[in-house]
Length: 322
Ligand SMILES: [Mn+2]
Image (cartoon, rainbow, N blue to C red; front, side, top):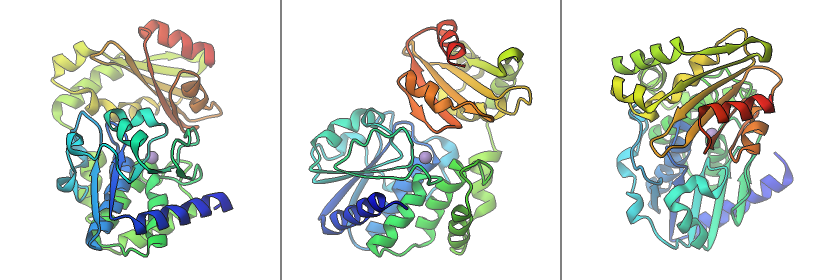
C-alpha cells in the first residue's frame, strides 16, 4: 500500500469513528462487490452499536442472485437517504454519476469518503481511499474494518466473501493475488455457506434466462481479423423471453470464452434508447481505455460505457478504438 493510500485509510477511519451517524451508498445496479463491501461495513458498524444507513440509487432492486448476501433487509430506500449527510461513504463507484439519484447527497455531504479500486476513479471525495491494485472494494473495506478496530462476524465475512468472489471471477482473474487467498482464508473461517452462495451467485439461472442466453449466443458475431466477438441483447429479446436487462449481466462471461477473440463485447439496448456496453479483454487490449474514451470506465480487463449511438454506430466506435 502506498503512503498516500495508508494516510487516506487512517483519515477515513478517524472520520467514521467520530461520526454520530454514517450514510453509506454504492453504485447504481449494484454488483456483488458494491453490495458486499457496503453491507460489510454497515453490519460491522451496527453490530458495534453505531448508527448507519445504507442504500443505492433507483431502481432500488437487488438482482435475485445476490440474495445470499447478509443484511439486504437492513437497506434503506433511497428516498429516505439523508439529503446532506455529515459523513457519507461510497463503495465501488468510480465517479459521482455512478451514484445516480444519490449523487446530490454526495455533493451535499460534509465529508465524502470514496472507497474504490477502479483505476479510472475520478477521486470525487474529500477522502479518497482508492487502491487500483485491490481485487475488490471489499478488500479495501477489510482494511478499513481493521483501522476501525471492528471485528468480523458471519454476516460481515459472508458479504466480503461475496465481494471477493464476484470481482475475481471466483479466484480466476488477474486480480487474484496472494492477498486475495489470504483474505478468503480468513473469511472462510466464519463458517460461510460456500456452496449455497456459489450456486446462487454463479451456478443458477431462470430457465427463461438460459433461453435468452441461447439466442444471444446464436447471434454472436466473430470478427476474426480484429480478434473481436460481440453480441446484442435487444428489448425485443428481453420481452420475448420475459427477462430483465439486469439478468443478462453475466452474458459477457460466456461471450468472452471465445478462443479466437481477445476482446469480447455485449451491447444491451436499454429501454431509454441508450446502449449499455460491456467489454472484456483476455489479451493485450486495455478495454478500460476504450470505455474511458467513451465516457465510461472500469478495469484494464473489464470495463463498460453507455452509448447514445445505435448498435452499428457504437460498434463502429469500438472497432476504431481496436
Ligand atoms: Mn468492484
